[in-house]
Image (cartoon, rainbow, N blue to C red; front, side, top):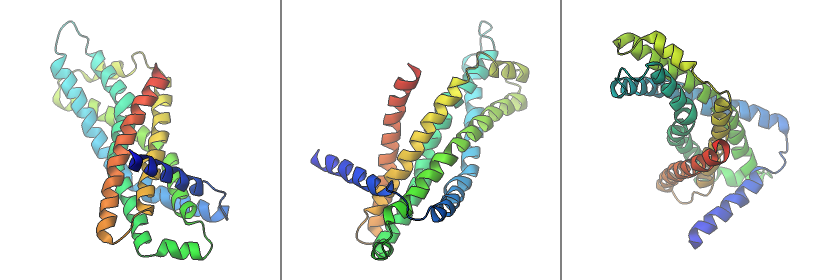
Length: 247
């Protein structure tokens, strides 16, 4: 318990350094654009591939399990849309990105720590925590919502594609279901969750990388811990935010 409290305290101390006033805004703008490409653009392919298959699987499973003359097929399109918007495209994609982006951040910063590059920045009078971590946090909070929108659209298209390709349901019924009882607040809800998840993944991964010590094996261990803790905290906040925003 004491160890957990110590980690939480160290995390908030580091975040205090991260969100201190930047020295040169222009440098941070360039680094934010760089991190948006490194963390966001490079995740588009993975997000799209996973989303299209999940959308197809959801539609296929719904079609098989709701095969009843008393259940209109439009509900399959409705269920696919709601599943993608409310949960998959925010929480599940966040867990996937925690493995990809989180491990990358922890490894990058951890390597800089053990090779004393961070110490060199501190000697030069640079706030290393803010310089290295803040652009990653801002970039992920700006770009991850775009990945979420992409995931929703691609997942819904995947559902239509499997309906059209297999004939398991009428594609027109699927499209009618997509328009059934649509609530714009659902998009707002999932984007709010995504912003929180982006911050959690980036800041927790950076924390473990920044506090790595020892050799390259310790960097690997820090990267693993970063992914595990990020996933647990994301799931915890998924529960909390669902309770706060939807109920």
